[in-house]
Length: 143
Image (cartoon, rainbow, N blue to C red; front, side, top):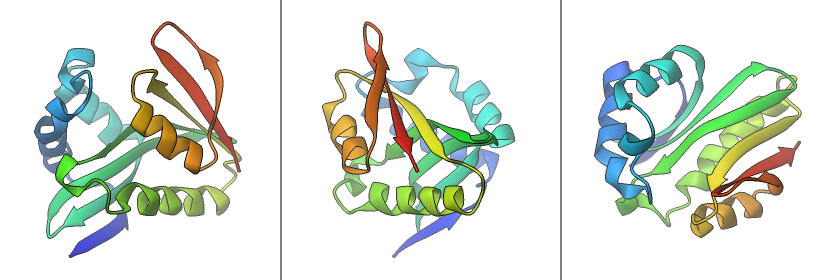
């Protein structure tokens, strides 16, 4: 049974999720960041919107919300075996709910140009491209 929570998971469970899903990205997370350092940074400063199957993380949105009126999504991942089950949509709805209850008025994120699947999901939620560089787009959602 899937359970959704707005909570900070344990450092160990976040790290385990990142290592477990590392190769599921078009460019593995470990090729872009040191996973242990990245885990600690997110654990220390980000808000977490998490989907669990029993006690195992299967989906997560990590978002910096410490600079109102803007929030920045740093990490989005749903384990490949759980994709297509509406997990991202549910996690994102929880994020938007928290934003509406605070002074957050816009959400920004960066997505690789080759990640068409993610771009489509973000567009469905109302994001639009605001800038681009050689391999990624910055997308924004005004709440």
